[in-house]
Image 1: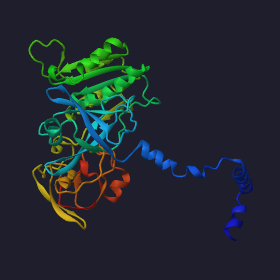
Image 2: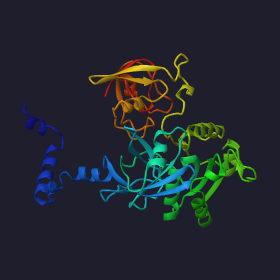
Image 3: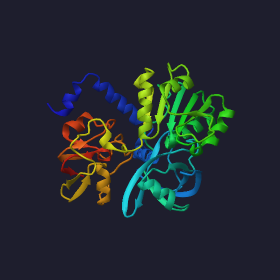
Image 4: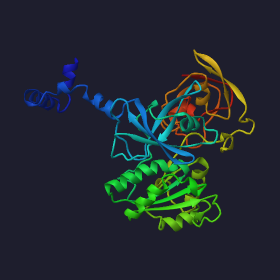
Length: 386
């Protein structure tokens, strides 16, 4: 029996054939639209953005905002809370870092990228000390899952920020107040010093105009005479400032030590994990302090990494494998550098690596030996395929 004869045995096949004949005779010819789906996807999610710095604004002694405009006269839309991964070349090393967009998603003439200096920061120091208006860069399109979902997140939101973790929240706040959305936001913002509160005056100004927005700053190392909230963002403080926690959605973003502490405090309040959203910026400051790190491996230990068909390089146990690859001139596609986006997934042929908690390895990755170099730390000599 040939294919045509088999088709005629399918229930409803003749009706489908008649419908096709009617559509071919009377419906619009959609053939001219072929290829438009790809064009639309490329328009909304271009792989690479060509950017230029039009303005640099100093926010605090440690923080600057870089206004990025498109060299191609177009920036794709984004959701408040998302980030771009900025590509830079520092001392001959091409690398990248994800930075949240702090400007409002309502305007697409520019993206604001706010950067705070990181102790011994390779990229942040370069951006803050060496970059000027007019300099050009490339980045990925906006990405990330740290944004408001109207179907699941409700209208009572608690933002818990630490330091530069305020950047995605600034975009969310601007989105809500600029559009007068029916969302109630309580922002609890921790900083080391009251002189280093990013966007302090901008947010305070909005709180005076919008009753659905409130901000509480918490200073961990207050200077003499400071009379505001001090210490850490504890369960007791969250309970006091947020009020009844039932039904509220909690968003947490900040340095590793801060969000690790805060997540433990939220657990004390019995807040379900489905009601907590966390944004992680990059690898941990010290992977050897992470649960599961083997006691017989130190951060300074060095291992040989064989790149199948390419070269052999050295990699330190105490830093992500991606950093060692980039120093050796091998750049792997990446977006988040936090073990979430999966773009950098790489085949591990032999050897053993350590992934900190929170890295979103698929079950298939574990089964078939794939790793995320942005959050993979070598524990032995390795062979990988890139």
